Image (cartoon, rainbow, N blue to C red; front, side, top):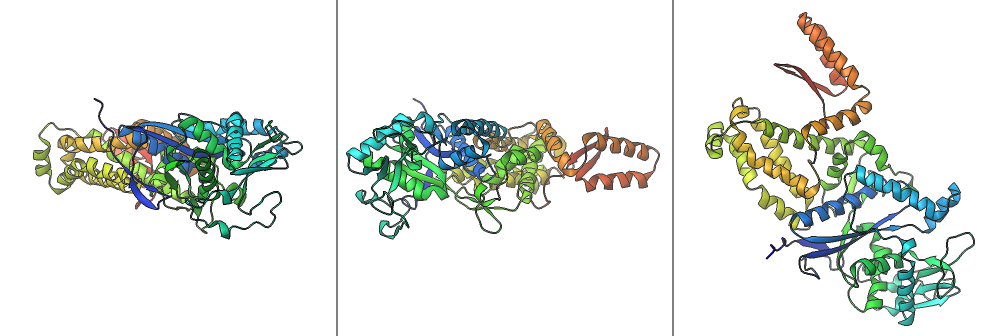
Length: 498
């Protein structure tokens, strides 16, 4: 018999409680996450939901769950139509162009593709069918070629967002019967994409698309529905209303919302705000894992401050510390009993052994309790600091191998479960040099040339010139390490207290 997957708890936005997860199908998780409206490049704020749910899916599979991960594309929408009018493209063609770019960018970030990526333009039949069923059941009404959901027909409206229907207002009711009513189907306008329907040509409203695509891919009730906190109202509230009125049953058992990335001023990052920073541009200057760590170092429900590139400098410093600790541990030798060696080396070695042996319990306890990546990464960074302290002992290099072996296993969990430390030390250093040196205003050739000059100066006992070259490189955040076989160099990462 196959082993049971590990149980976990997750905060449910609908109940405002952290709950034990109970799957609909044993050992399986059906996860639907609202994806991109594709009319512009992905920015660092968008990346938050993408990275969090990619890591969540990796972790669930690591813990033995079978996961069907569905993330949609909205490829027809008012914003897409407006942008296409500016560029002279057909809206669907513009959307496809940005879908292609999105796929490239997610691959650059190291994300695994979802199991299904439905899109609005290929789900029209399902959307029309669900809209027709809502009309038949008295929860929606046609008006002048459009179809509106009747919010008063659903007494449970507001259960997710805790909005009160009587407090919702609209300046212009137009075709609507109630201020809170929302469009399921929009009548065609000249020059806009349109599809045939029982109510005439038109296109879907925003909210109905996810209800229809979730039903197609995961059934009438799904295990977990995810997305950004800004989608709770009205988008997710309206999804709940549509799906539960059609099926007469719970739409999603768990609602899992990530906090947003916010500017230091407190405003949300967004293209409409004029403060969006394209993820592609950041990937030119930072390793993808630094961006990943930036989003995972805080709890997924937290609002994350964006302090400009200082934010990524800090996360890169932490990432570098993890890679350094792994590299140092891998270089340590020795074949004696771990406990015996730790006793001989003293408190720092004993600490490494203690942290490593307790790591799995602490690491998994954090992630199984509302996916607390912040706490889990804290345990990993604690081990990294302990390894780096141990490396300062003279005898550690030739004796501490058995002591750090369980610590290496512990750090390996980051790759398996969260998508961090996935590179070899050589690959990581190569990526750092390729991406950070242009930012620092120096090339590999220039660094190597200065090091050759420094070696000659040292050979001539011109210590002043050798020191001056070291200082010059230090100004470019280049650290020189003199070894018995010659000098090596690396890029200094982040701040010392990162």
